[in-house]
Image (cartoon, rainbow, N blue to C red; front, side, top):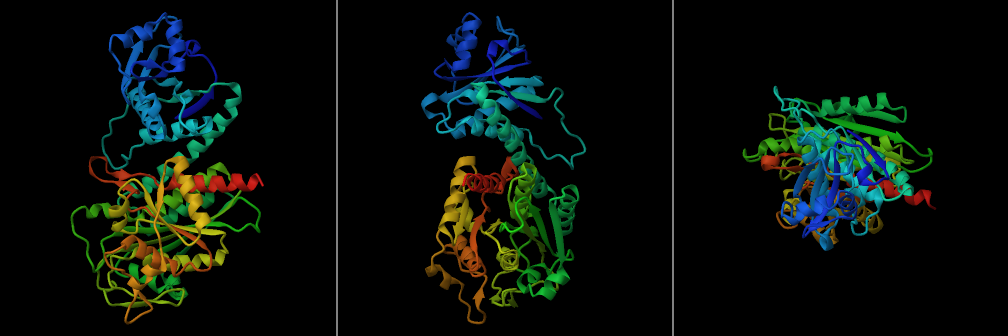
Length: 501
């Protein structure tokens, strides 16, 4: 869909539809009042009759409003004005998009971008509107033989800004929103694909395609035999039960000076997790195709950053494997040697994510990173702790954790920090190896991060557990595209901060 920004009066818009807001109780927004005045109180008379109260998400589509040039006027309920914030703004944008797309308005001018959202400027409002619009219109129907195509879908949306000096920030916001939405959509597509297609080899081919398309992108793929020869005993142990070989995929974006240390993102790419010998229950096992949500997330963030052409060196490493039962599969009780030389007793083969990540986190030290952030659907315990709203964040570096939390608050892709105190480390003790891969039921997300922390002592590191945020279950089943917005916002903030020095 095409997006634009302009500055103008609502009554002068020659458009299929003009969109304005209404707060409770029946209070028109500033631009709505202006439209009402021009139309000789046409809007306020309708509201006075009770056609729309202004509750959050209500809509009323009007035709042939007097003294206007648009075919339609869409009134969108914004709820109580004193409570209007980030969440409410995104909801009304989504409701607007759904209504316009269903009612044949192929283009529209939106004045909701002029509403006052606490603490947010034009750039934020336009960008979030673009992201919300693209997210609302997203669907995954690649494998459906019949699809319900919208007859007259929304094709162009123009956001109105208060003054002409807001046009430049608005245009930049559209670029940012489209890039982040593009990355989120790619993350969703990869995660939503069935596991018989989106396997480690498929992810590798997708990465290679990115390098072919962009001169600033390099790609390297290591196969399972190379990983074994390198000494990645933990990673290879996870893949042994599958006929599909593991891959370690590296993407590099060279957007800054050669001597600038890169930001490194590491993604857990278990393209299907049966649990291995420690087999999972059958119920909802189909959703274990989403166990590569971390890989999808860092892949999507890479796409967003390269589209924005940010002044940064970025490395993405994806540890891709299937965790399957089989004659060669790892067993509970096996001991493996990691790339770091540390040994691990495998007490549960379903705690496999930390095994592929620990070798990948050792591997990335070769890039001399500025910071390393790993992303993984790592523990069900994180869902118990935080539900589906916030990703779990653990880090060995307070400034990095602080920056990630702030980025999440800004873009609405939030995280919550959990501790990784030394007191938790003893839960990983083993009688037979340097450590076990299981810390027991108490503090499961924390002990998983404590395990990873033993392989990240040489650099500043953060871990995002997205087990609760990477996908939705039930009737809305599907990938969310998180944490692409969070990662992209963090890197954008870094670039702006360094540019301002």
